[in-house]
Image (tube, rainbow, N blue to C red; front, side):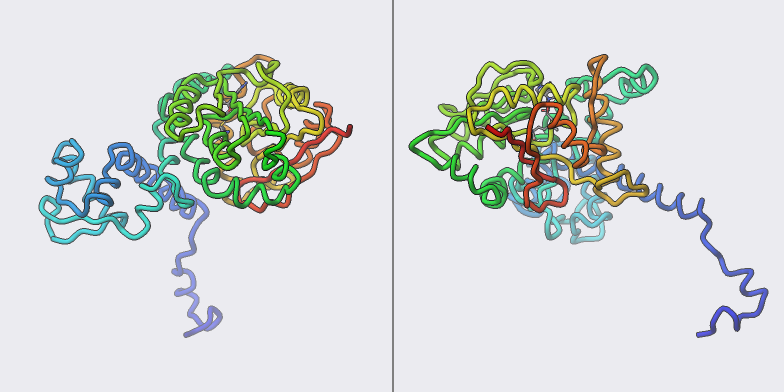
Length: 376
Ligand SMILES: C[S@@+](CC[C@H](N)C(=O)[O-])C[C@H]1O[C@@H](n2cnc3c(N)ncnc32)[C@H](O)[C@@H]1O
């Protein structure tokens, strides 16, 4: 191999050096490819196509169409696209008659909703934001907000499915053991604890807590009616309706209940128009000795550009999802997912009257956990 200095001048001049524009164009093409492929993945999740291929076995287009109630031509095109991108494998040369099987990992990532690898919910972000885009464009011009409901039912599916695997797999077995006194308080059958799940969404966290500690009561509050309606169905299906109560409520206003030994904000404080008010409400709703746990984004300590993938995800989700939803009130102080850094959390907690803010030793790539206490 010759070094650069050994090459004839004319050959050096001909060596193509990637231009910044060329590299950026390649990167943006890759992202467009990802976006259009992700919408195809969404169709597979929403229409139960991966589920059928995983649970009922490999299929030809005609068989998949028959099993799932979709059109044969669309089944053929979707199966071919999925094989081309590598999520399915095809046996046969003709897409119309080939037999398609799921690639390794499809079950865990796109079918099994409680697998730690499940990401099917993420694909609902695309149709959801699609619905809200006209309102988002207007909001960018006017400075107004976009209500959560404008993102449609897909938003509730996306949000519920995104965090569910963590609640199902980690909340009880990995996270709570890192806060032994709170774990012990929840396990104390002599004094059944009361928990408030603030911004509970569809309630998966409330359900897991109630299942793990069969004597405690959990009140979950969320402003979104669709989330609470779905959550109540899940609560009934999981058999904890006698101890989990999900209510539509604005958590920046005094709560219907009180006397909580633990109040949790799971990934919702940064969305709220009035985070300090919500923290004050939580503080006032605590029983003596009660604590607040806040799960928030694991963003860098200070603004970092360019950022890593977590930073990029939070920045992108912030502009199109969290910040517009938090700006629905004129005097909004919404923080957003990119700016909810430890120093900001400390300031919010101090303004809300908490004396102690501790970052808990729970390791997670996406989240940081804070414990807020009031000295008695
Ligand atoms: C990012 S989601 C998190 C939901 C849930 N904790 C989870 O982990 O899946 C934020 C939630 O905050 C709720 N929310 C926003 N503003 C609220 C308010 N003022 N009062 C109660 N809930 C609110 C939204 O409806 C949404 O369900």
